[in-house]
Image (cartoon, rainbow, N blue to C red; front, top):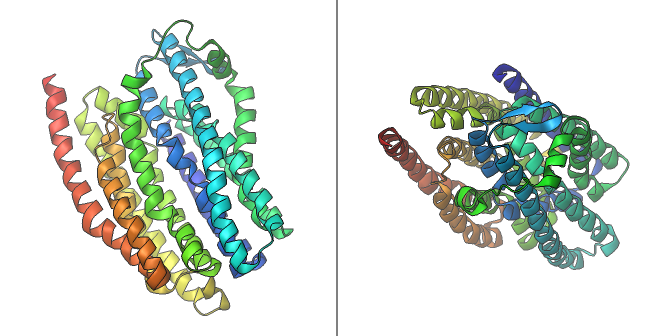
Length: 440
């Protein structure tokens, strides 16, 4: 099961990397530098959904993993076990909460985008009909796609990682091809919504064919049983949510900030460079993602040797992949520097700084994933403080020093504050929590 899961995770992440590379090339051939900036700012602001989702997916995965120590699946997505009614209540509440989050995201993000884009459209004389409808549909489709997240989260948390990553692989393939076709035929900003659109379509087909029992259980809502959301989810979710909010503030806002304070060309360079760095981190993170349910179950069983062995082994492998990928990416940057397309990405040293930023982010994320196996999120405050330092620093740097200054701020906060404190807490809390668990 683990080998199958790892193969699909690696395949899905490899496709993300390959498709991301082709998308970068397509953008270079089909969009102007200004259009590239608009495109990546669209994507960055649409990522605001993570601020509303607030890490609920990660919390659902963890809670489901703990539940499925004493539960198992029946055909068509039905659940069997003593706690099956509680699980049905838990899942029903999860979908309702996501519906509230999606509605809030729709209303607020729509207006934020209108404010940001109308300001720059007035400066650069971009007609409203070029961006208003694409922005509206991107936000609406992203909101609808949020409703699919609890379905995938409970399946992944139950240990069926291979199934979830098979779905994500199909979503990625279909969405990427649709995005390329729209770009090729001049669709520009309409291409930004292809990934969430096919995320909805693929997940809906999968539910109807393979997991219809989840929908049936959703209608029943637990049949009298009541899951204690405030006790089981909120303590974990708000801490995970702080971490997700921090990630958005640390990285995704860099492109809109440069779009607003500089121009679409600089924003496009930052957006494309961040996309490349993110692709590298996503592929490396595959070795950590496959173990989340297993690590949670090792904590429940107090199998500390298993927990340590699996985590350290996978972290080591993920770092090898990251460093190998970074060498390839830097080599590609040098090769591109000999062509006219070098103007589409950041200069070498800011680009190198982004890779270093993403490396630290990857390691801190791995620490958080391991600690989350205890159903706790102690690094959330570290990430939040780091993000609150980066945000004003990035605004100041963007005004005076453009993209290079923003990268310096991002990397400095990560290297001098976030990583040292996260590493200290990771070591300390692993010891103390295990001692408490063993004494219980």
